[in-house]
Length: 330
Image 1 (tube, rainbow, N blue to C red):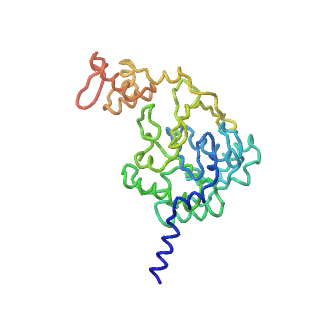
Image 2: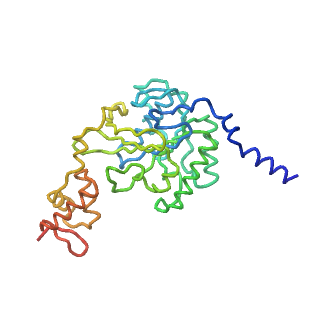
Image 3: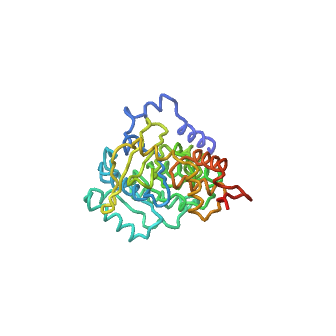
């Protein structure tokens, strides 16, 4: 009897193409957040530099999704049930932040935005922790789950590909068990080039196997008041970068247009004077990676541009390489 029961179970889970086509809806389900930013039951990653505002942006997106509002600049076809699992702010402080955002949005999200007040301390990487989030999502009837930030949901080594791959499988299990889309806030590597988006996230080789969309929030230049949001999609057409500006009174981001060529050009300028300035700023002695990073921070240039500037400064003799460090001439 046991063998017969196992055979019936296998038959129920293995379907022919004809059976799959019968189950297929006549039209694909719409994206929860347009244009293609969050597919139904998709996994989207949001990353950025420390303190750039990625948690504020995700809170904006959560409220807009719950209210069915275009307030943040991305079309939301219909209101969704959103469960927020955030681990960085004490609950009263997080609620205060939501209240500030709510003033300009109104009560539209009040019934659809839900907060897991017991999220802290539960790890997705542990079976009981995964079960906690599944139970919470089902209780909320969540269509979208926000995890902010990812590193607070696990105890794995994010520099180890196998550990991150196992964590990504847990994200898939959470998605499949709840039938919800996931918005995951995750940090990025310290030094990235402008061309990097999905690959900028820590554990990127594993994340590329699980993510459907990637949004990267960066500051194009210290001289500009706007932030830049760049996109990478697995299935949807590519989207140009957007310039965003934060209203400090309402805590809402708004789209202020596409990224201008002038702003992009600021990221490509670095010369030997920037190298000597970087050394002066940091005390006069730096290792190669430290010097390169400081130049990239000050000029918003790419890694390659910073490397060329260091090489040219060495050739001109404006800096000296000695004992594994770079310094100004005596």
